[in-house]
Image (tube, rainbow, N blue to C red; front, side):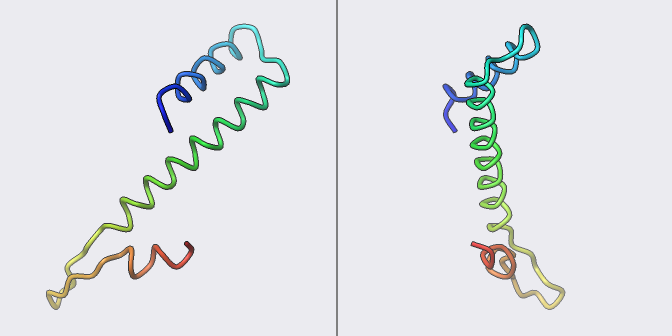
Length: 72
């Protein structure tokens, strides 16, 4: 998600608190929020998929390969 969209999310949030939003603005805000949440999820999934743990027997196991990519 680019900075322009983040700024727009913040603008709409401020306007919503100050004076309220029109229906098209509410729809735009909802769409931008969905995009933002999806971007956060993708980022978190990418981080979690790259976690390696060392088992007690010394073997390194990638958690993304074991758990994360099943749902993708």
